[in-house]
Image 1: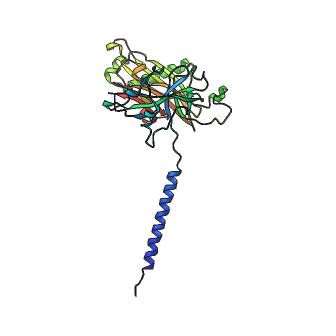
Image 2: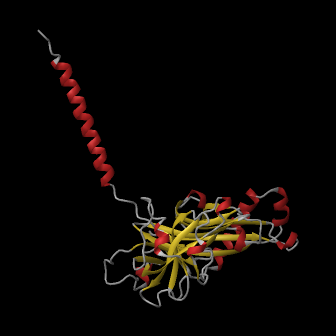
Image 3: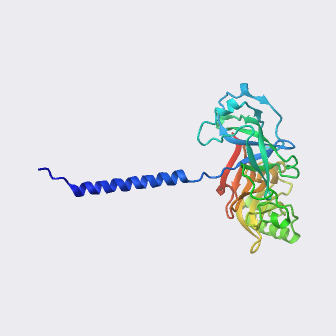
Length: 340
């Protein structure tokens, strides 16, 4: 007579059932996860069009025979795009992560201060960089704004997301109170007492962080600085400040010391995070990250568009702003650039 180990078989069956249940739950949770919303950089191409690069690619020398030359964009940092046929673009849209864009598709253009314009893709484009040294090339499109004057008085640098139908009767705040609900750059003048206090704070910071040689020169001059007020998505005010100390005796006219900082006026004016010199060339405009625009990403998120010049590199970056973080620690949503 054969004795069947009932208890052991029962335990094995229970373990198998439990394992299957865990696997099913994992698969349900994984497939049920909502894909994170994607954002891309865009720049003014001309009066009513923008250029956007959706994906980084490697052309590997195959682009030239397929390209048709077009004019360069108004906004810098978007290189020299050329028109490409849809069949050629499709070669690079076969991976799951590639954006499936085509002529006629609609996207939302985030202009800043809560203002959104709808664009329709009208021309497929690409840009080839020096891939031989490790750079990426890019594919994207030109998009035409559906409301022809939407780009008037804007900052030339924007963010783009997939189109959403508006939840209200418009996509532009109507009153000052409504504007104050959204992240964006502010064109308001800076009070003299605030400028004075910024200069004092920056001088103290310079003396803490500069080398002895830098302090000997910079300590004898007052900083020249540029203040950009902006608002984050919770409605509170911030400043991005770039400063240079320049006596006029430096080699080739370069400043003795450069410093940038993110600041808040609450509860008292103080530095949240510091940005250091990124390039040995020139001063405020090229030697420190340049804040091009601030956009509202929705859901309480603030996007910043930063232009960064390096020793032998350029980069335009869309990042999610965070108090207390400098640019290298902010979450990057897209970056377009080249280096050597």
